Length: 473
View (cartoon, rainbow, N blue to C red):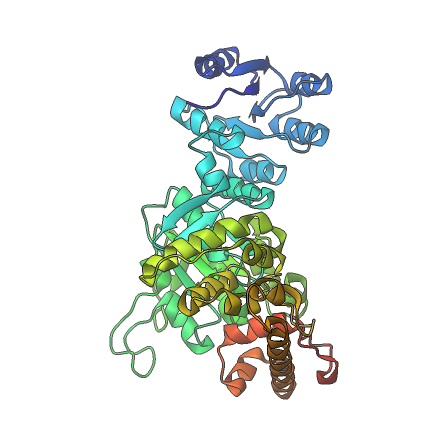
């Protein structure tokens, strides 16, 4: 049963109004009703403070979308759930963009209504995912403890039921793949296949056959026909990660798939029809990619039916303690080691750290801490790189160790020198390859993703010369 709440119910059908009110009052919710959008707006103007508004989409006068917009203007934080007899994708997307938290299609069951109310106003059951850990599959989980991530979770629940492409934006390591898995899990396709294709990790000349498959004889070595990821994922969900790295010619073929859900294998003239939900993720600068023709404008607008932007970890620091404890619990089992303590000073050091590598960096930090078993060494990694010593490391590592401060200074000098040399080498490789990052990664003998991370870590920009680079994190 949902926790009792103040609910404003807005519907122009008297029978539906009575039915939903009865369902709500069974659980002792305090219900105020309105039969028009104008009446609902007037209620809020006069001081009504509902915890939640259940708002019919199709009404005479000002419709549900206009009412939603006016209510959110009066009270920007107001939680609103839309109700409708028809599942109109266009209107659902509009409602999401205007700030609706969820969408119920009439007629609905009491359990569905209870679940939505629980998500919006809080229940013992629903708060477990709204504030803590939501398990998705093996070693994949979603955390929504910050206001920004709670909003992302609500949007994911809403967009999951609308079969449109979704573009996931955010820095590397913020959890775009996790969000994609969450959308899939919450969607009607949850029992079908979820596949991820990293467009940056597959060479350009192989990516087309990876996605769309090929017929025997399509190229040297193609002795047997092979279905591509789109065929294997029929009725399911596919995540195209690093979509900005897909070659422009292949982007054109993907556009056709988005338009009519058909394509042909390499070496075939026969069209294959599939039913696949497409999610795309990228960390590129979209306006810059469009201007440089790296990303086709028509493809971008097709993918951009709805966009979700994941905030970096430094902007949701209230989740760091939860993530640290969860990673420690998970990884201690994997490494068959006892969980190590997360002391107050170490936790403070983690909260002050900027985490440029986001969740991936935090996960690796816990791995190294477990393997090394030394809080001093773990804390030394979190020291600001430009301070020349002391800082976070000396606060944590100096406890009960003579000479800890000077040792920290020497380590910092060594690390800063290494970082400066590394940044210079990366900048030279980028200049030599005319900022072709894939070629630069080959030249430096590191992975493409590692190069992207280091470019962000060292603040290397294409407009800056090698001599102006710094090794600041």
